[in-house]
Image 1 (cartoon, rainbow, N blue to C red):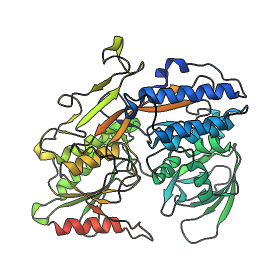
Image 2 (image 1 turned 180 degrees about the horizontal axis):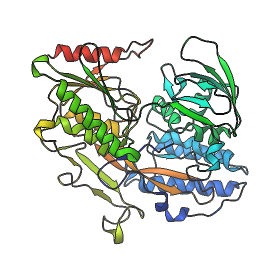
Image 3 (image 1 turned 120 degrees about the vertical axis):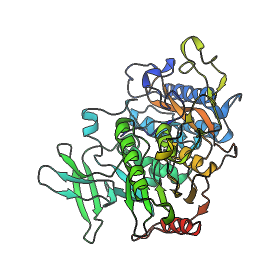
Image 4 (image 1 turned 180 degrees about the vertical axis):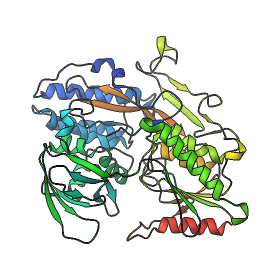
Length: 466
């Protein structure tokens, strides 16, 4: 599973693991971990947050809720533990950061699982549907007998535990500004959370409900099974024309590092089609759907902004970074450890407009929800603040002014990796309140049975502004 990232200016938000805090370059970790080792790892983690996170610059201690969380976990880390048990205790600090860019990663080895490690984990990608229901993201076929699992099948239980109960259990270890966002973040690394918190690996017992009418089924997943995806959820932007002639551009992710060229081409093709279909006298309309898009690279969001602007623009009005041993640059070229540097936004991070012939001049709405996060919030705040589109939907789970540039700290004894945000960003308007991105038009209803109240309200708004 790819890590979701927010890139703002340069360099990347997620630093390579080789850039870990020097104290964390530990070798193999013996098991069980002693209480003393666990206490030392907690202390190292707490100090790294205090030293690196922009929220705590100039402060001698963390905020009360975080200090209490670290103290509570320290009391629980009072017996020898194996790695999985240790992670399930230490990770209870995660929700108290109220920041999806700061967390103890669910990697028992301290590194993303690879090779045979991946073969033993839960094999399928999942997504959250309305009502906190867990669904298969793609369709799959088993090689041994051709047995098929359909995309959008509801996962009712795993290993005998109802998935809604399971989500609630894992929520105590997840990361994000709100409970809804923390729940969604679990699905992005679902196999890792199942292993790190529950200790679950092959075999798995699943109870599934198919998306169409049909009986619930039970299936056992084994390590020697070969599952092949037969219908994969789209990752690139897709364009369709609605019955009333409005164009709908769905952008499921900005995490496109591995397919940057394909992403750029998909956007170019989509806007070329839009320009061909658009006639000024027909009041051309476009809806951009970034609901459920948890972000990725800010450059990908900038590409989507380009067709709407006629002069250089910025996705933030202010950006700053706390400097540490891993991001101060060669010989401290960015500044001294412990200081904060401000970015020159007159030179860095500017989005350049496209030539006039390649711009979009129709009316535009952007759909957002509580799962729109990270680089998606940067995109949406820019569209709102520069009055390039009308935002419709529900407030985001993350804040409109947010953090980024996650950097790893490797804990000395356990070897666990803690990612800590080192930058913060203020939206283009300069509004500094710490609160969610609030749409211009709020629609609380969720789509059910094929109806989509948010899209319907966006279409109404575009027609009203004609």
